[in-house]
Length: 329
Image 1 (tube, rainbow, N blue to C red):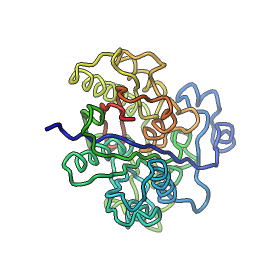
Image 2: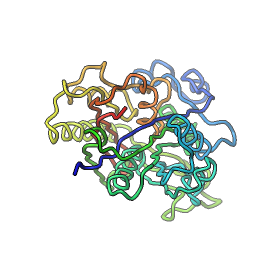
Image 3: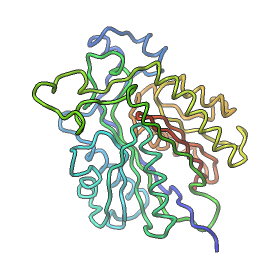
Image 4: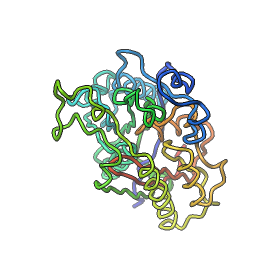
């Protein structure tokens, strides 16, 4: 009996209309366009409008995925959301997305793994498909980073943006397409280099600390860069070795859009030319869990059935990983 694989059958993305350019940031902090581009590759990023929530973006993605696939939201079994910026501590954004999108027969939950959130959620969703428990699983990567960024801190405010992307997973029995392999890693010792210290149960928000810099994202850029360059490249090379792949075999690398230099280092380690690497960091910045599905959405028309694709990410915690899949449509 042929093994069931979890295949991506539809993809969609959603970004806010508001553009925050490097020129805009020059008016807010001591920085400039040339400096930002040379160090990150980012030219602009999208920021939500007042009152626009993560569940708003996510429900739009779910409804559009269903429309593109020709199914009703009522057919969705499960929605998993990778995010660190849920609408509320509870209920989960998945809970709200199910309600707002009309996927009222689905259950779901949020998953926290920072920039690796989409990969963690994708591999989790894979298990429900391969076990036969569910037939239609939507996996979303989404973050509204503007909600936790200090726009007086030039080390972080230049990097992050807001966005949402998602995929529909369905069982595949007909060919070898779908998710083939994954490598996921975690190392909590990286907490001190990239975190939002205040806001959890360890350091609750109080009236005394609500405006403290620790209430926003902190990143020690040099250390994070060093870990990311090494580990994202390592897991990408590992998954190629495990599946006997060379750079010539890979059609696309879909890297987390954190920094152009990290992306280049990963592609070089894999032996890939630049035309095989999806890059949109220049217009969206780092949307944390949303970067990989947003790339898949933007490149959807260029993807061909059977394409060998490697997804790779590195995030706070630290978390990192890679996924190897064959495109199914």
